Length: 142
Image (cartoon, rainbow, N blue to C red):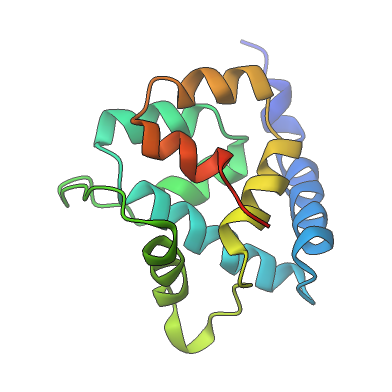
């Protein structure tokens, strides 16, 4: 079997995502962008049931997919999506003492993510999720 091209270029594609996020968020480093991405993805994941989360993960590029599922305990029940302010508070709660997430963290990650995914596949997966999940990535005030 041939190695899928997305795996061969995974590091390069992830670097491009981080560069896009750095430009969008105006954060200073790729490390800060990685930490913010991790917090946003974990926040989103915590509001999906396991089958939903796995469908969503399949729409992500390989490195972002790995970050999304890293250290996940699927036995922890999903909670309903709260409002945008509460979601942002959840993002900030990740690594609280070392968090450099911007005030527009979710919107920033969403914008960079949309530049780096297959838009049709991403939207098709979002259409299978609860409306609040789609809103998380679509209705991103900046």
